[in-house]
Amino acid sequence: MGVNSPAVRAAPWWLTWIVAKHQASRLAAGAGLAALVALGLAAVFPATAVFVVAGATLAFVVAPAGSPARWAAAAMLPVALMLAWGAIVEPRLDGAGSQCAEAASPLALSRLGEAAAVIALVALLARRLGSSAHELGLRRPSPPELVLALVAVATVPLASLLLGPILAEPFFGEIRLALAPVALLPAIALAVANGTMEELAYRGALLRWNARLTGFTLALLGQGLVFGLAHLGADFVGSPLPVVAAVAVGGIVAGLVVRRTGSLFLPIVVHICFDVPLYFALVCREG
Image (tube, rainbow, N blue to C red; front, side):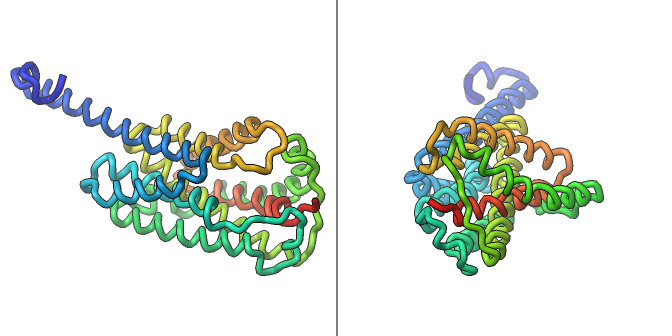
């Protein structure tokens, strides 16, 4: 029953208002869900990511200010840009650890450039939408968050470096690392770039802006699923499903932390701590 149907036109004003509100809510939820589906497909089929970027950009430009289509397009654009960057721009690794001793690692430099582009895009979108830094989770951390962040810095990188190769072997095969001290600098650079842009894109823009359309629960689960699917790749030798599921759960937990604290600070720090050893696994792996 549409708002302009005879039955609605004959109804009291308050009933007409309820019907219109319900239809607007369904339209908003549909736009938010469509954004999540498009990102999921781009994560599974990376070659389509550039088309998702183009489509979301067009939708953002032509959609009326404040419309569900504009918020949905803005929510998905930062993640879509990262997926497209990974498919087109990011340098390929030789798998022999030859770049491990390079202070100016091509992979680290690519991630720094990607992070700059994603952060600039989020800032531009937020400005055009009228969204605040506080809505995105950019605020000063509380003392408990600082304590937890220090604990993560002190424990997560070393534990991941020691246990990661063992836990990853069923999915990626044997991982032998040719560690070089000079690799620490690009490892930190990649980790800071990756952790910051991914949390800002997934737990910031995608979660917060899409929650305006779908509600928090669907936005939380959707961004977690897309985050997990984005970690698919050709380097799996076993089933990728356990890894995708674990990463998706991690994304959901990070989203809950942001919801509870109102800040991206702790998820960013923990993400960075996990990505320092990830650099060694990607770049310093032998064979």
